[in-house]
Length: 363
Image (cartoon, rainbow, N blue to C red):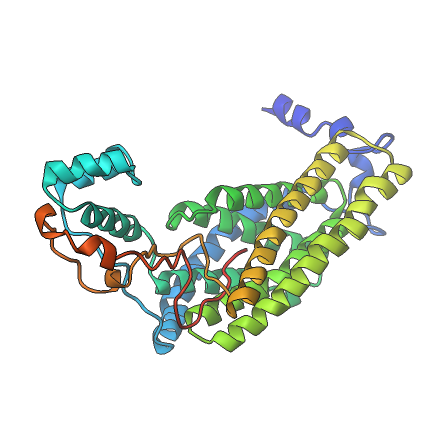
């Protein structure tokens, strides 16, 4: 075990030339980040996760119900063994050929089968209340603790604990469409926090984390306003979020932070193995920033053209006809449906609310 630890903490990987771990020991005159400090993050992350559960149960949920946020989930599809087997074992999105085959097998109208699959897919998606609780959690994660952390070491431990808790939450909550992207984001952030702390790049790491937190809290509050049907507040918060996000992550981050870590540090200390890893992760983060900025600009363009902001595509309930809002229809026999295909054509909301308060939920 000692040999593995010695190999992992190899000075020539982690530190610049002519610098050893002994040079980074704490003294009466100077205090340096110590790798063992980060071990506290794991138990602290578990405590944060448990506090979050209590917060959601006794504070966030009552507030949501007081705001009359819908607690019921999507409408459930009527039980059907044949369709359920196709849905679970073959495909959740049957093509036209398979729909025709199922129509003949069940003697159901094709449109009724399409509706069944749509309701069955929606059945696995969260209710508005659950999504609102997600946003209160992320808002609570992002900001309130920062004024309490004056010492940079405690700040790092708290940040690492929160991101570990977020990473764990991804596997305990309902999976969303952006699961892989957010998992990659959280994993890269955790690795960056660890590398920057061990490398004594804590000042740069602190700037990166503060830069991210500044915009994130606005987005989470905008989502909460959306689900509480406060359209004007939602739109205002989205505009503020978009301005802060784009200016900080496409402006401040590459021009000042990446410039410092890539070019200025090259001149001061020169490259070494962990320097390359650290900067590659920062560049990966910039690619994610660009992707999210594209999504935000896309929502902004939709908002300008429609006069309102679209909902989140990650957890939306599918809708293709106003009749889906009513009770589930009984299966329609094929020979009774000669006049319905034209009159019941889908209105095609495609993930947008036809009225009310659609607001962004992109991260």
